[in-house]
Length: 102
Image 1 (tube, rainbow, N blue to C red):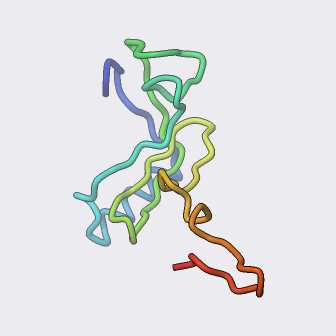
Image 2: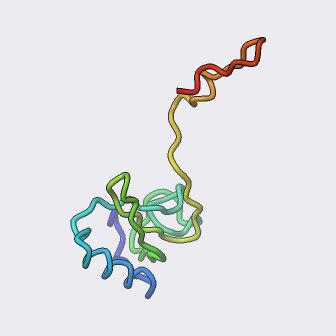
């Protein structure tokens, strides 16, 4: 992957992959959750290094979004946010009515 020598999987990730394949998710798109500093799972290897191995710690489905997450390294995942937050359209009128929720 992008100059790497390969990937290693934790036993937890291996079990999850086996399970996801067994329930028909073998061809599901994969979203990599890794450090934002490089294509590796190591935040000290900046940019696009070569000759590294990435370690996948965990694999889990995000069924509603239709993909599988492969989590590598020590990274905190969070949901994506819109460019313009919904809160920008919300307000409370003088009489206490809340507008802009939907």
